[in-house]
Image (cartoon, rainbow, N blue to C red):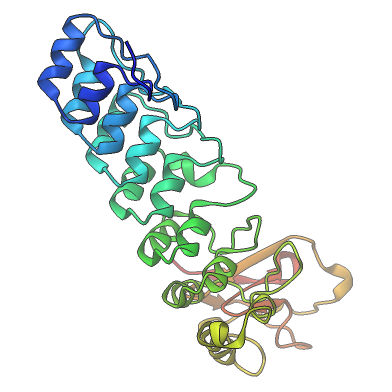
Length: 303
């Protein structure tokens, strides 16, 4: 029997944390797979509430054990819901019970995307530790870093960068710096710049972050525009950040240029091996990042 929301007695007991009632219903043969009107099973509701005890019972007891990878009408699994609300203990348990962290919902979001979007640092760490592949999934519209940057979750964004996501990863609306700047998150903008975010990379509309900011009212964009402009002014007159040292190989000629490049960023320790007698610098620098044509550069990157 289901009510107007599609809830069974097991749905109600799971939602309201009535663990002993859940056990009794399971012993009496209640099904964990019947969906409510939104396609959610009792396990979805328990995960949404962050009720670890009820989650454990639904997954491990009774003849009808809940499917940890059941997707509702928006393709969210119980793991998606627990990650979205930062219930790390529930996330950990579901992962132990073989919940799939790579499943996408109808918005293309993984549980990591939701944890990053809502700023749940511990949950982000847990998901990355369990499934490092989440950092390298092929993406089109966004990465977890875009979502964290857009919402001003600076520590989450920093954690994702330190875990291996490129600070300049491209998404539908540009880089994470575009997202943080256009959504008005100055603390996140500063962190991204400090981690080597390029201020020259262009979005899908071919706009740099400063060009995109000019489309906003001046009073709204003033603080972040100033941050980025001051960052650009930190570079030397040659365009090289004080944090970087690089030289071109002796005898450099444009005709010998290779299409491959060696990238560097702020914080890298570069030891010069050779230096061109003709030029002091060949390559490109954007803020605190840049690259040299690999055929024409000799340097050693320190650890």
